Structure formats: structure tokens, C-alpha cells
Length: 412
Image (cartoon, rainbow, N blue to C red; front, side, top):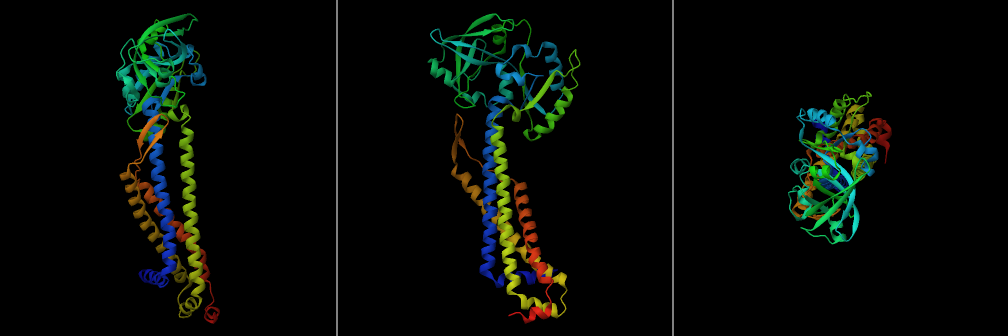
């Protein structure tokens, strides 16, 4: 086998220009795919992190049927005290959870005593919320980053439209579950940057203030936002938690809770899926480049070396060794292209990181691109290139091994 490698390398070096061109094409393909995967993966991670860590949380638990009506923020589908206790008992026993935050969501009217508009409000325990969505505080453009009772964080769009400033007194009016109306005065404690674009109208108040506005006698919550220690185990833990909560039944024997990951709650998941689809097609392009390049050079090699093939066959070289010789040439081309491509790709990624390219996502400004080189991607790309190189060289190699020595020697 060692001699076959020497012969294969010698043959590749005999045709330096063709070998260099083929290796260059493979290298360009590997570089393009590696850089694209790293950059798109970085953008995807920043996008997902921005959505989950500033607003949604990694996953949420609701009462069964709540999400189907979430646009209306139905108060009649809140979790009651008994259900809350049962849920917290389960969550407290899960080592995968680093924090969770109960929320009471409702729609209301926002008034500065001159104008009135609608607002979506989240009643929260500030300390728990900031542990579950740690980027929430960074969205506070003005005012306090700690929300106290009697204070309200309002979205930037609303503050500008209503000309409301930090320290102003406003009134929130909401319809209670029984249909009656109640209002409460708040002091504007902060102005929030929207995490969902210009249309974001979500404000935050203390959960006890929310209960007072809604005249609730006992604790009720709309959802529980959960943050995991390892985001990579999201789907695994989601299935585990769903199995645990499916055993909690109401008096009618039906499940009380439903579990949703951020993917099911945010439209930005479609963008993340699009990035994955694009990455898949880019990988297909790499396979096509390698396949065509290797097959072309191997076919030309067989055609130009017909008399040489006839000679080595005539002196007793077995067809299997002739086939192996050409396959090894394709294998060596694949290795050379993969190694050089990975080195160049890593260098380009490091240069991109040094340039600190910034971009805007939604309302978040100045996000810095930080492309990560995943060892698994390097291994996957390299193995794919080498396997495709071997496959591409099989047909020409098989053709060479099947040649009749006499006909090959007569070839001009």
C-alpha cells in the first residue's frame, strides 16, 4: 500500500498544473463552506440569544389552551394557586433549570392624562425575571434597571409617541376577569428598547401591582419563563418536562399544562430554519465542486495514461492494484484540498473576528460578529470532501482497471 501511495503522489506531481488547479477548486469550496457556516452560525446564535435572553426565556409553561389564544391574553386561562404550586414543585426538582420566572400578562389602556393608547403588560418578580432573561436590563435605555413596586417600564415607541419621560405619572386601566374596569397610577421608571422591532408594545410592572390592577384575591400567573443551564439540551429537556407535566391532570382528567420552547413562540425561528437550509445547500455545492473536479482530473489522467496502464497491466499488475492507484490519487487530492482549505478558512475567520464587524438586529444596535470555528464542522467538512473525492475517482479508476493490456499498448 505504501508503494501505491508513492506512485499516486508521483503521478499527481507529474501534472503539477492540473493537480494545482483541482486542489485549488477544492480548497476554495472548503474555505467558502467553512466561513459561511461559521459566520451564519454566529449570526444565528446571536439572534436566538437576543430573543431568548431579553424577552422569551428558553422555554415557557402555560395552562393548556393558553397559547392558542395568546393574542387576546385571556385572564380566564391563567394558572390558579394550586396549579402554580404543583408546577413549582416539579420545576424545583429539575437540575437542568438555572432559573424560572412567573408572569402575569394582560392587556390594558395606557394614559398620560392627555392621550390614551393600548399596551401589553407583564407582571413580574423583577429579581426572578432578570435571572431568567438576563438581557432584559440591558434593554432599559433610560431610567432604573431595577423595577420597584409602583414603577413601570414602558416601550420606547410608546414613550416617544405619548411624549412620556422618566418620572412622569401615568395611569393603566384594565378590564378584570369579571368584566369590571379598574385603574392604577404608576411612575415611569424606565424606557425599554424593543426586542421584536418597531411594533413592540410590551411594558413591565411588578406582579403584585398587576394583581392589584386586575383585583385578584389570590395569585394567578399566565406563564412561567424557564432558563436552562445548557441551551444545547433544550429539546431533550423539553420532552422530559412535557412528560412530567402531562401526568398533572385536572378534575376532568385532562392535562393542566403545556410546554413550549422559544421555537414555537417566536416567528424568528423561521429565520433560524432558513439559515440551516442555506447551510445545507452550501454543503451540497461543496460536494458538487469536489465531485466534478476530482472526476474531471481522474478521467483526464486515465485518458492520458492509457499506454502506461497497459504497460503495468502487461507486466502482471492486478486490476485491483490499478484501481487502488487511481482511487488513492483522488484520496490524496481530497486530503490536500481539505487541509489547505481548513487552514485558509480558519485564518479568514480569525481576520473577520479581528475586524469586529458590527450589524443591527431588530432594534439592537452595534452587535459584533464573532464567528466561531466548530471542530465538529471542520471534521464533517474534511470527511465529506475526502469521501466524495474517493467516490468521484471510482468510475475512472474502474475504467482503468478493466482495460485490456494489448488494446491499451496500441493506443496512440
